[in-house]
Length: 142
Image 1: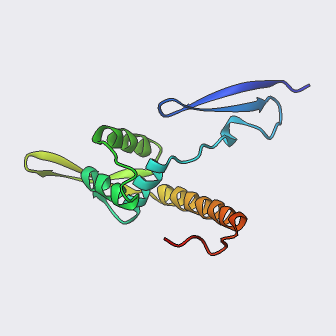
Image 2: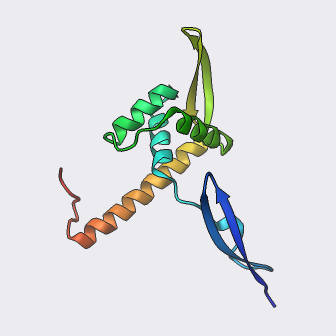
């Protein structure tokens, strides 16, 4: 007889994913629970896909990529960068001192590139389905 129990996974600040795990040889395991990438994370990784950048460069690039919709504060950015680094999606590329302040540059890792590409493909697929249902197979202009 299989036993089921609920699992609650905590991701980041206040984000929870509930899953049902079954003991024994169940196909439902905690390892299969995958969260959707947040827009800010997607944009940070997208900014770094162009090459190594320091914090302020990432902040301005994210604002530009999102047409000003996403404006990262420094504290939010650096917490996200620490999390992404611990997750193996980015790494510190180099550090330099500019005007007596340390400037740290970050770079996408191969795993970060893979996850960004997978998320971009998911977005593209979802957008195509939405446009098809709206009768806009070619997308929307302007």
